[in-house]
Length: 165
Image (cartoon, rainbow, N blue to C red; front, top):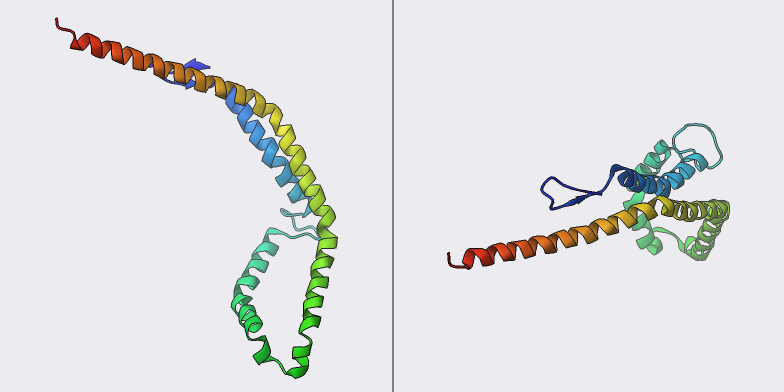
């Protein structure tokens, strides 16, 4: 740590700033790298369950285009279909549940790994953060002392100015 030229603020050394950036890199870089590798986000290889950046864009566009139609169809379900189709309402519900469960079954291990990687990267980032946090806390304490000293100096200066010459 060092003081600025005026002696009013404390600056952290560059190595502690780098440790803070390293902490961010470990905490967020590892999970993002894992996601990119696992789901093949940044290449166009045919990995299983790969969703490329263009895949996200296409899904978003289709969803936005059909959102209002799907909402209207669900609201007017009874008006749009005949009697036999109305009886199939529970069947559609169960089919939807089966689809969600299949997707869940496919991706559950992926999510377990993802959250495991998030936990490990968070714990690993604590190592560089520890040194940075110690210096940052010390910086705050020194800045408080400087502020208190400056206030006392200012009060003394004001008292001297008020005294008759």
